[in-house]
Image 1 (spheres, rainbow, N blue to C red):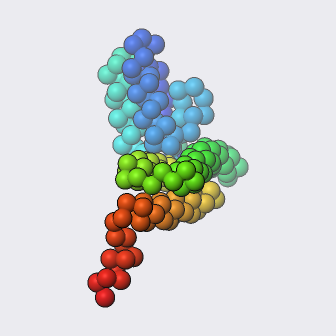
Image 2: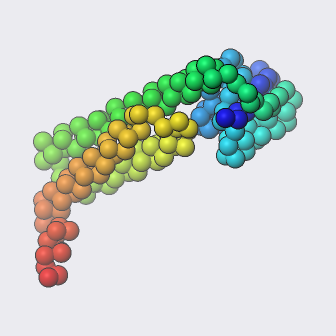
Image 3: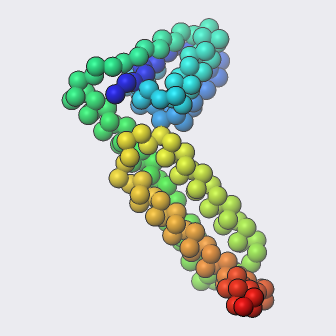
Length: 186
C-alpha cells in the first residue's frame, strides 16, 4: 500500500494555521504518528487534503513536508492499520452512544406522552446529524472496522423507532397515518 506522510510546523501565533491543519487532517482520518507528523493512505481525497494543508501552513509562514511512503514492512503496515482502526472504533463507539441516547429520548418522550410535531421535528434533525456523522466516519474508515456494521444497524434502528414515534404523533394529533393513507387509497 502507498501512504502519504505530512510533517508540518505551523506558527504558534496566531493559532489559526495550526488549528485549521489539525481540523482538516483529523477530518480526513489522519493518524498522527508524532506531533505535527501524520500518515494517511494515498488516495485522491486524502492527497487533496494533505496538499491543501501543506499550502495553508506554508502560506502562514510555516513549514510542511509531504512525503510518499511505500515499502513499509509488513509488521509496520499491520501496526499502522491497527492504529487507524482503533481511531475509527473510538468514533463508532461514540456514535453508538449517541444512537442509544436518541432511542432513550424517544422512549422518554413516549413515556410522558409528549407526542407533538415539534418533538418529531427535533428528533428528525437529530437523526440527520447522526446519519451525517456516520457518513463522515465511513469516509475515514479506510480498512473497514468491525463496528461500522454495528453503527449502520444502530442508525437503522433509530430510523425505525422514529417512524414508529411519528406514527404515534400522527395518531395523537388526529392526523391520518401513512399506513392509514395507504389503506384508504385501496
